[in-house]
Amino acid sequence: MIDFEIHQAIVIHRIMDYLSKKIDLTDPKLVPIIDELSLWSSYFTKLILDNIELKPDLRILDLGFGTGVPLFELAQRMGDSCQFVGLDSWSAAIEHAKWKQSIYGLKNLEIVEGDGAKMPFENDSFDLVVSNLGVNNFEDPETSIQECFRVLKKGGKLILTTNLVGHFQEFYSVFESVLRDLKRRDLIKKMKEQESHRGTVESVRDLFENNDFSILKIIKDKFQWRYLNGTAFLNHNSVIISWLDGWRSILEGEDEAVIFSKIEEKLNAEATWNGELRMSVPMLYVEGIK
Image 1 (cartoon, rainbow, N blue to C red):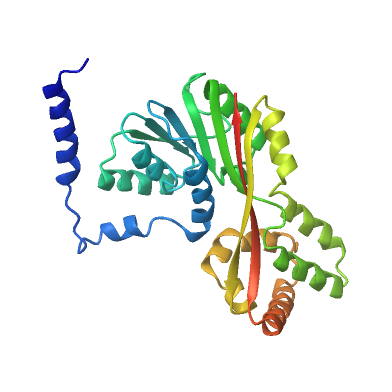
Image 2 (tube, rainbow, N blue to C red; image 1 turned 45 degrees about the horizontal axis):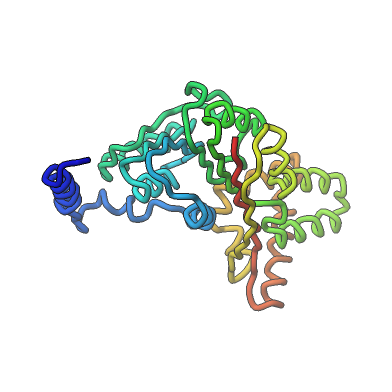
């Protein structure tokens, strides 16, 4: 049993640790910390934070953590008894995450640059692997899930979130109608293939079960992004960064200016008719056990 005075000293040390931290709102270095989470990622991050089991003394891997979401939030919420590792191959994001770690002063996490399909970790290294939207961006999802199984201890859990087929269905419906109007049905198949790589509840379940995970929990949810019109939607930074290149790749050198002008025109017409433009995003949280 811990001596009361020793226990009290430990408690006081912990209190003094956070009481000694000073937040200077005039420090420009604080601004990126406050503004660290993309709105897109926040919906999926909330799914994890609302459903993950909080337990002490775990070793946890955040696979594809980007600039630190949900890595930093989980490390703070679960405390110093848990040890975290973030793995990502995006060098620029890793540098930013290391800078943020220095600002946070978190000592219970390690940041590693590496490939999710060939993780630099021993077998049975982790109690939990979390990947927020990572499966969307894995070049080889099957191998990455196999790697998650390898590095997890027996009884360890894998948690994934992803958006599903049906994401931005309002946009894809207009895209298809424009291709039909332009007699380019040959491009519709490519468009549907590009859309379908998001996966379904069934395909994500199969990804788990085909790699020997037993499903513990599946939660399906959704949200909507609202825009004044199609012009606002197509000029949204998130759309330009995350999706525009994928849509352009469908066109194979066709006159994309003509096609996108017609898409924009139709989206604007829908927005005028409905009073606004809404884009639907179905979400999935899946938890499996080794």
